Length: 109
Image 1 (spheres, rainbow, N blue to C red):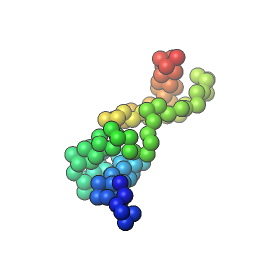
Image 2: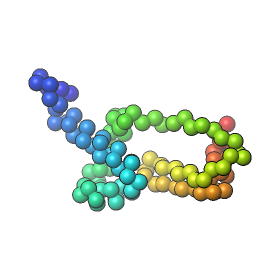
Image 3: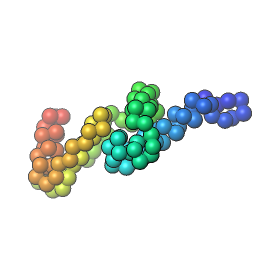
């Protein structure tokens, strides 16, 4: 919320700061713990803000589902990485990636 002088309120400034930090973490490829240690941020504070902003939809307009181009099973897939809301990441490479995509497409259909 903006104040009469046009400045952001303290809460809005914090929301903006934390939304930016969470986006930096997502792009970093690091675990939450690694990112927080490098930034000297308490992981509990980071997780609290991540949950708060996620509930309010304040983190970069995240969609629950992102449209992806569907490729035929004969096309090569070199790697696929899936990140869960918990921050857990799974990476499949080569034939395992192709098989994972095939199973996912079959379940969605």
